[in-house]
Image: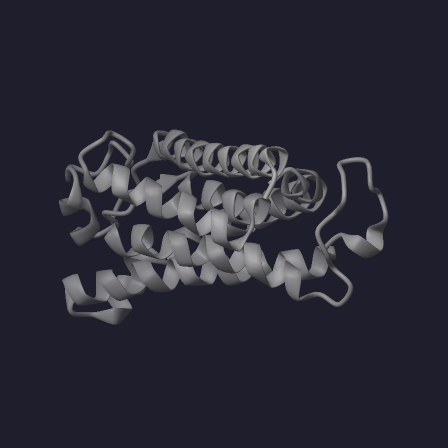
Amino acid sequence: MTNATLSVRRAALGVRAFAVVLGALFVAAAAQVAVPLPGTPVPMTLQPLAVLLVGGLLGARLGAASLILYLAMGAAGLPVFTPTVPLVGIARLMGPTGGYLLAYPVAAFVVGYIPGLSPGVSRVADADDADPRRQPGVGRIALAVLAGLALIHLGGLAQLAILTGDISAAARFGTAPFLLGDLAKLAIAVPVIAKLSPAVRARL
């Protein structure tokens, strides 16, 4: 293997590592935008939207790695989780919002993975390649985003059901108040991923 090849591989690894860190920081920044809701311990935040975007833009493996890094940062006590929930570090993962957090890497993986299942989709060669046959379809991206949202809700619902002992109460606290907001997340995430993911992934 030549020195030039090694340099190229190191540069590629560096770009991917930077993307993983940047994705984790993006989710951390989104977590700071939080609105407490009456009657539920789960606040409204921009975190889920950020998770969907990170998975969709970085792809399955890098997206999941980015969210695993995010959880590790939070578990270590760094102030990356939503500030309105009074739990710090790993205790946050055991609290009422922990199920959502633990579902983030899986959701990011799925959002990054499903569009690649479309027939004819492959890595875009460069940022200027505008051939629509080589880009994931909007319908497949919408399906991926919906699947990601569903996984986030399932994770949150499961942990809330364990903590409350009542699955209907868990759904009332952790699912119903956020369904309208999920439509807004879908409306934002799908076009952003469709527009930017080919160029972003071509550089990873």
